[in-house]
Length: 266
Ligand code: FES
Image: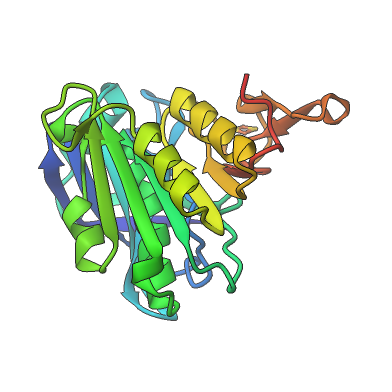
């Protein structure tokens, strides 16, 4: 983990209030793992005061020679609206990579990826990482859901990797009109995968965890929570452990990726 200045390379709008931010940075990302995150100071030192967590969306550069990273973010609050104004050349404060990412065993062949809304960010990094590592794209399926069509980001990128994509929306504006967990469960029932990897809103992860447990399929989920420090110091990201003897787990250092059964999803 490094703290370093990073330079904005690009800050493209890719959907309503959604941006891809490219950052040039010198070190620390040689061994970055999908699911890990960075903390970015989104404004001047006073307001907003704290850094904000962003999943790594991708590593820029050639394998083994990272030159920077990309994050995907939605301009929702004051800090991210400030970020939306950033232009190439600006220097920002970056901390990372942080946390524990996805751990995919080399023998895993059939892998189902499930993403809800902005949860697609670490899942996109995971997909590119798997393919770059030699995984067979025909064994990987993506289940991508959102409220409406504009929430479905990056579907074409997955397709261009050779990954089969199933879409769903709440309003039926794209793909199936249902929760993305419906086609996911159907696929698990028809052809159980070696691993399910998911990221999205808590309710979706609750559902994915339940489906995986019901069908006895290994599953890893990347949790999204508020984080103030990102390093285990503020205790603001604690979630209850599934094993009550274990007390709490900290999403920033014990996660954000957990195997199903490690945390109590409520
Ligand atoms: Fe501070 Fe996790 S964000 S302990």
